Image 1: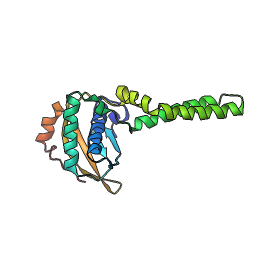
Image 2 (image 1 turned 30 degrees about the vertical axis):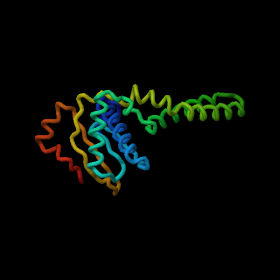
Image 3 (image 1 turned 120 degrees about the horizontal axis):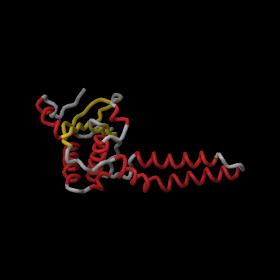
Length: 182
């Protein structure tokens, strides 16, 4: 794992935005589709065995639409950021509740913080997505490859991206083939 994957670097945030937009477009085509995905500095992985051509087309459209200013595609209502925000609010409230002297006050405060965590998870999570975990400015991002690979014995789809300045040398070395099978 690279250091850039551990922090919200520009590349991770851009790939996270592209991941959201791609998944949004895929699920608009097939509302029954249920997938999870994870972004990193190299691109993102969709944990489902989907048709690579379908994912590539959705990714290319997502890239085009984000560049055209459809920044709302970068925010996804089911993002793990929302879960992390809700859990954090609940945890902080529950820890604060432990400072109460009366057991009933501790219990009431814990319940209240849990309800607050549930209530603010999505709206506050979307603010955190917008300002911290995604970046819809993809002017310098190029799609390098889309392909299958194995993860824990299952086929998943991996999307690799590069900064546009790196795209030509990568393609010259054969990186743009689209095959990632391992």
